[in-house]
Length: 178
Image (cartoon, rainbow, N blue to C red; front, side):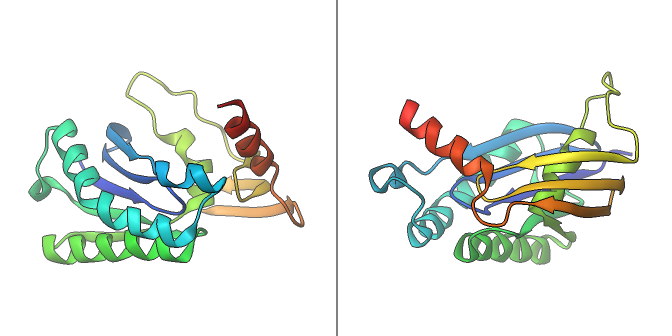
């Protein structure tokens, strides 16, 4: 039996919705927020307002691209953190309301764990997933961590930056380069 999950990601400034069928990604729609460019960085209040405008259209497009309707969904997964509080609240409020109205399961997802576990989302042909245990270096705009991964949900942060994340440097350099 196929299991369809709607994933909602709103931890910073991009509003994303994905549809998964088992471990395959059927649709992955991202609405970027251009409003932050003139400020040279993300403005949290503007980000949360843009999420409010983008979330319904992004979900609608994801469902259409996946060629399913909302009644075929079995669960809604959403980012519970870490991230910008206002942005997270928009995503979690939408996901909770959608799941309640649809009568489907609600799944909280840790944003950083999701980065690590994304390696296990493969199509039926690929089986190049890591074997447990493994070490993972996670570098994002807000976090830089070395994580020991013993199983899907058995992870331990064994090292991290004290102040600025290394990914922040990549983000800033990318913005300068255009």
